[in-house]
Image (tube, helix red, strand yellow):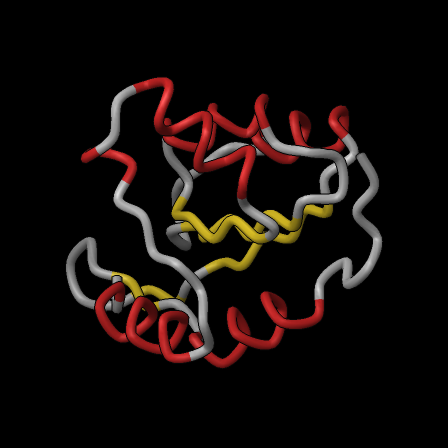
Length: 116
């Protein structure tokens, strides 16, 4: 995935980028609680969405041939504003995400809808 380019673009727009692998369990939950927007590839770190505040925007990035809707279901149950973006296939198991789409969604999703 073109992760480095995505991170650079998000940071340039004021988003904090957090590597959940570097955090303890309680620190991961605290990061999710504090987040207004969560952008993440489909994977286990999204299980921390159970701590998100109602109205938090979640943008889940999918490999074009892999993933489940498990986190969409969690997001719906918790009142989160969920969007998925499916990447484009590349060579071998590589894939690319449309960075412009991620930025557009991150900056517009659920503006001023958070409560609690």
